[in-house]
Image (cartoon, rainbow, N blue to C red; front, side, top):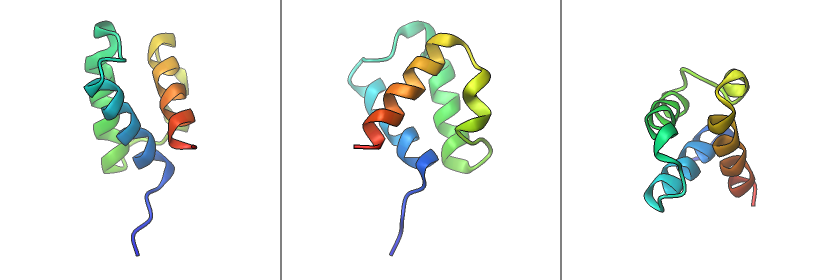
Length: 68
């Protein structure tokens, strides 16, 4: 059985938010890079806490959605 870790869940939620146009254009490029880093394991959620406030807000929204 395959379990998704928290980073993968958040990356999936961020991608959904991008699809639904819930991510401001100003941070879309950053969010794309973050999704890639989370999915390939080169970054953890903790690594992302010192980012731009708008990016952090999007990550927290995705974390809340992933936790449901």
